[in-house]
Length: 359
Image (cartoon, rainbow, N blue to C red; front, top):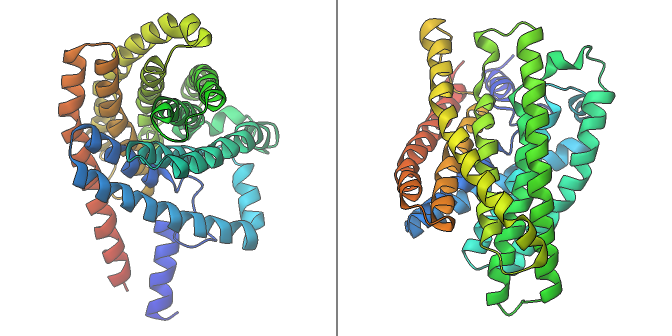
């Protein structure tokens, strides 16, 4: 095998940059970069926000092309992923990534393009939201299925909440644009509330499934990977969706649910914040106590997204509930999120260069 072939093989195995080896959760980097971009905009760092947003767009287009090629040329591999409970739920990163970009476009005032991406994200949710549970649970050859549960299952709830966030963000901004339409605004409000409730229910289901996995099957340090940070990230995006819904205009449905959503968001923020030290301790237990090496892996982006989402959630919740202390936490936590994003991004580039140079 030539040096070039060996390098290409290394890229395939470690990076999944080939359509034949593309990971279902490849859009996690889009989610992470997009949410840090939104956090930067909320902080008033417009130039940084724009730069991160277009980087997220570039990653999105790149993975869209690879995914399209994979669907055409490697259908058997896609089918295997869909029936693998350890990998299938990673496909929901495409839904969340699409809606994170749609939300970013709303912030930049690009409403028509945001509506297009929101429509695509909602369609992906309808297809995958019903399809993945059938293929990965009922259609899986893994028995018991609970042995294949991992942190990526929580992206199912994140994807649902991403639809709620995009819908509510559009519902807030649409009346102030030439595209204002009462019927569309009402539909967006209904979609936001329904998907908020669905996402919250899915979170409970996934947490129970993860609990069963931990209690009934072997769970060692190597099983505690970065996607388990989504236990916090799923709560954080639920808070963002709730805060955005509270900022929507007057509507009978919103009046009936406003108290519930407002109270739930505050409680969920407390739980999400409480989880952060526990997740940090779990990382110390894995890497310091059991000495599992810390190396770059694409799954690290599943840790960056929750950290960034907690900052955005705190800022939105603090503003909607008029609690300056929570907003202050979000404003300062953003620097932690940006630092984590920069570290993972630098590790990705370094790993990429080393893989190219490795004989």
